[in-house]
Image (cartoon, rainbow, N blue to C red; front, side):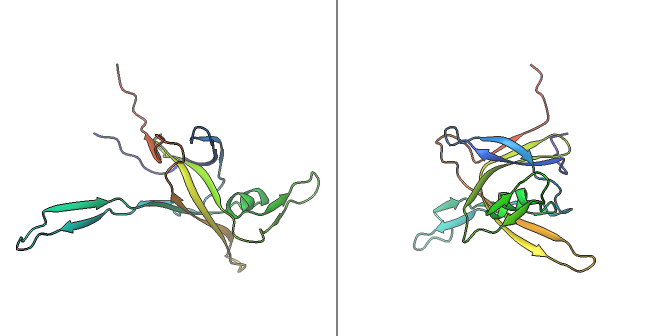
Length: 172
């Protein structure tokens, strides 16, 4: 039977090394809302080129479209708020951490690594992050940070946007 990847065992966020374009300094995201982590690659667009008096196209162009991810983050400490919303955090020993919102829009780009339960590792080397708060203060509600990410082409030539490492070791 072929490789089957399922579930998630770890989601990590890392910095992007400007020289190599690779992810580094990965750290765990913390708790993610159950069943919220989704990765979707958009269906490619086909453009049909027709000739006069021909029933079928004489050529078809294919345009690949983007790949997005989204998830809800349950861990909303000051460090995670800075990581996904921008702004600043005070981190003083013996005092509660405090997050302060940024004055305007913040561009955030990170590398994201997902490890599935079977050991497959999917690495996105450059992701534009858009985070926003959803706060439901009812008894059963929760404060979450919803995160959307658009996979971007790395800025270093020759570096792929996405890598997938399966869990099968090939015998020599």
